[in-house]
Length: 118
Image (cartoon, rainbow, N blue to C red):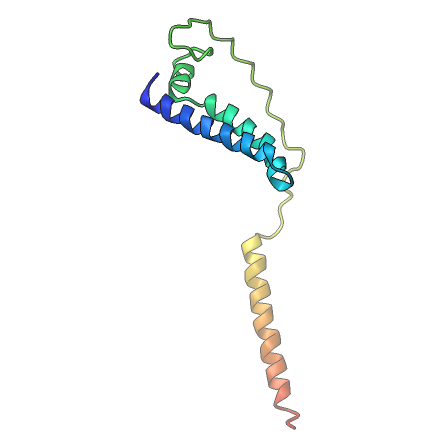
């Protein structure tokens, strides 16, 4: 077992201890016991030596285990978009036009505001 594996195993043991301690209590702590135990099991599955073995093509995770790789699944055909672009104005052009129209409306309101001072 490598040093990284030992570190991961110690962390998983610590999570197990926390889960057992939380299970003894009541309330919110008791509800957290099961997820902590699941996290410990997940962490044990993520040991660096197992990950390296999987990368090298040994699905069992054991460095000496020689298992054939499964055949790759065929890729599903790409779905074509049924919605085609119908043209129309560019979204940037619409935004610039709205901005310009807003400026014109603000100028008109400001101009008319001077016509009736209080």
